[in-house]
Amino acid sequence: MNTISSVEELDDYRTEYHWRVASDASFVRLDKWLAEHAPEFSRSQWQRWIREGCVLVDGEPICSPKHTLAPGAEVVAAVTIEPVCVDRPEPRILPIVFEDDHLLVLDKPAGWVVHPGAGHRSGTLMNWLLAYDAALSNLPRAGIVHRLDKETSGLMVVAKTPVAHQQLVAALAARTIARRYWAITVGRIERKTTVAAPIGRHPTQRVKMAVVPHGKPAVTHVTPLETFGDTATLVQCDLESGRTHQIRVHLAHLGHPLIGDPLYGNAKVRQWPLARQALHASRLTFRHPVHDETMTFHSPLPDDLAELLHTLRAAQ
Image (cartoon, rainbow, N blue to C red):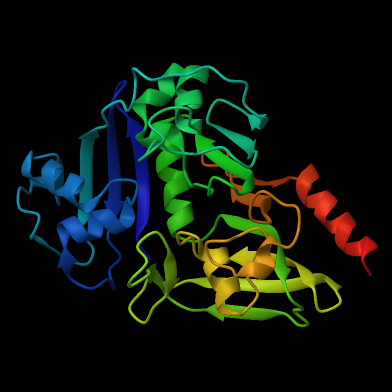
């Protein structure tokens, strides 16, 4: 397998990455390989850095993104990570469940937008993180390693240093960060099932994702925990991938959309008094990016989902 041999912080903005390409790897374009092994940066960003002479292969500067990378090659990239949104920090108390010098873990409430975007140029978790720790402006997306949808609650990890960010993003790409969710679906799910169905942009409704033949691979393991007749099911979802809206799309694909999710459901998802989709990131497990010990965090169901379960149980 390809490994990162070291990541060194050179100064406030400049970081150096060292890789050794596996001896049995296939020949591949340099820009494509870098984008796959440091996915926190886009392929176009890597192309710019290559043309600027920031990447060495076997000790020689390579200025062509089309350069063919050979098995066993040594790749060194010294890149400058520009601050993001440094002028938009906004103070807010954050629900931090763990913090050390390298990372923090948050328990995000439903309704919080993670990244600025169309319609949300401020008032996002990124803005609040920048106010909490100004040093996070030196990291891509203020250190946010993975996102949750606005109306999904639960656990997230945020890196505080370039080394931690690189290692956590690499762990996410290697699927060694384990994420478990609780969800409440429409209908009865009687047995454990695995949904292995590719996800991509919906062909006609661009605000939605969908199971499509040429989408990105996506795997969700669905385990029923409690059923409420034929009305609803409390399920546990374990991810092997992290596609946009993955659980929502896969459960709808099974014919069991999330309660409270009008984007992927039908009239049945709105039969209960819930203002958002019934999805909560309940457990997060990963190896510490510096100390290497396994860390596991749990988050109980928030009040609105606990009340929905009470209502469903009372109706039996």
